[in-house]
Length: 438
Image 1 (cartoon, rainbow, N blue to C red):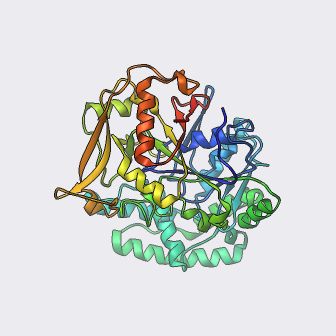
Image 2 (cartoon, rainbow, N blue to C red):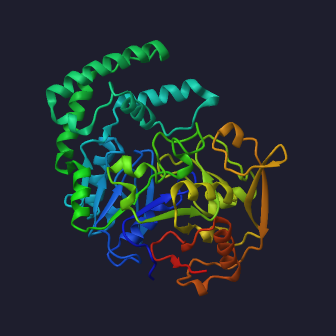
Image 3 (spheres, rainbow, N blue to C red):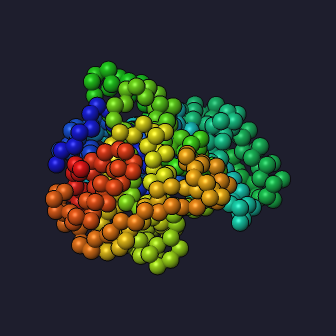
């Protein structure tokens, strides 16, 4: 199987996350992958709130911070500066990967400029969500939003590289924790945090991480100068982008392709291919508007067949029909020039299958996807129905082995989205992927 993805490539989800990016990154970064060899795989946004699952044979790997590309024996995996780093989580992942004979010591680099998630970030997340109650944002409570907020506030942000100047780190952490304690006590009546306990714990983390830490912007540009090929691995999905997603029910970073340059230091002009990953239907975790959501037996059937439970939280995902309006928007803002359709096999047995092709508000068609959640909650959906298929497609290796109904569905998606589909996933394993040309 070969597909045309020239130059440096960005792989990004186009819905509300959980599209199956990990599988595609792993497929493409295999030394014999369908798009040729990649030398580096770079994660550029998000934190431990993201979850990527990869199935290789009988083994399943679930990662939150380490890029899926770490499973390639020939590529260097890079956690770049746009990621907020939870040292405990990344060290646990490193330990697990090493125990499963994955090459980590030689193949993982972490940016010294990545901001660090501390216990007070997680506590703030939990206390805030609890206080918001019915109006909560549905965060994973991993401290991601508070850490990005401190990064923007500047006075409270701490980069990973700062942990190696022990005197500077101690003075800064003591001041920050003192302020946080006052805030938490005043707003929530919370007990005080001990800065020294945090300091000792994170000094130990820093020592363990030191072999992996470097200036990743310098690393990437040195490799680009040498003609090396890079894959950029997005986290979450474009509809969760802080600026261009369904605000305020979004993540706290630029999860779409626009976050790549700021999150790595690599200009967008040096990225040649943008591969968008979409599910054959739609899912969402947590709160926020979901126009095509199915709160019925069909939706539950999709959840069960697709094993739609969060990699990070284990929460059941909300499910619904494919939303062409939303995905077309993501393609537009992301400069996407090719697509991979995931979990096509989950739709087997459904007839008819519906696709959202237009939004209306107060009976009037909208000509643009509304990212403001209070508007999105009010839209009416115009659906198009197409015949489904009954065949099990999980054994298909080539497009001509797919039933006519499945091919027609892919063709209609391609027409609606005006973007070529190059891959379709028919099962969780790497070899359950079909090259598409329609």
